[in-house]
Amino acid sequence: MDIKGKVVIVTGASSGIGEAAAREFGREGAKVVLAARRVDKLEALAKEIEALGSQTLVVQADLSKLEDIQKMVSNTLQTYGRIDVLVNNAGFGRLDWLENLDPAEDIQAQIDVNVMGVIQTTRQVLPVMIQQRSGSIINMCSMAGLVGTPTYTIYAASKHAVHGFSEALRREVKPWGIDVSLIYPGGVVTEFSQHAGIKRKTNATTPKFMLLTAEQVGKAVVKLVRRPRRMWIIPWLWSVTVFLNRFLPDVVDATTIKNFTIPERVDELYKK
Image (cartoon, rainbow, N blue to C red; front, side):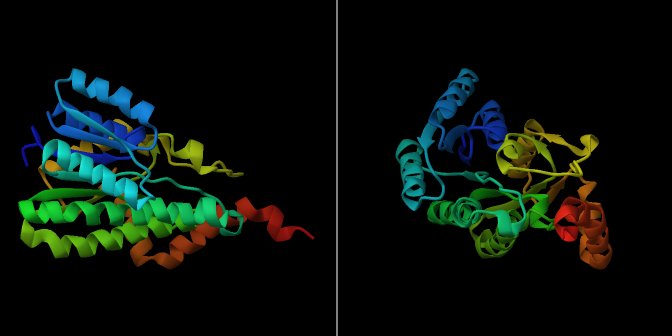
């Protein structure tokens, strides 16, 4: 797909990967629809993209609310008359032991945004792309969508759901010239960790040499529009973890429990 002049919706565009992807689409000459809750950040990004010579549309939207999603799609069609690319990027994580997660703010909210937000946004955009007989849908997944680890129970559940949804959707819509791609980044330097509530005794984290910048992932999103692929794990080294998790799950279980779960919960395990 030639990106110049195409209408691109990016959800969660106020920071991190969404912001970087939107900026990259702007550099390519796309008409970029910026959607998120923090409208002040969207407006600042819009000015930056417009300075590059591209058009933007700012839409304040909470992706857990169907009416906001419908408004976003309606405003896009009223302004540009079509939708060529949808980047389902909006999402967040709350990382803790399951019994510590708040039922509403941590569990339900993650499912509402990370799963239902992706499904409902895609559902609203899909009839437009079917009528056009063209389109590209990029769903932001995560390594958590392929490998579940302790404290990631709900986040992993949400990303596994996105994986299954995208796989089925890809097989539904391809005859209409619509591509569905999944991207699975490992650790990315964004605001995610600041809001996730991570508390770890072991200080376990992604090795620095495998950390990605938001800009790297943003560029990968644009590449997926140009050359769609079923799924893209970045960096590629995480593919080894996916392989081990699939074919040697007992080894991964034992290693994870010994080196992470028990050290993290040792006080609770052995308290009298």
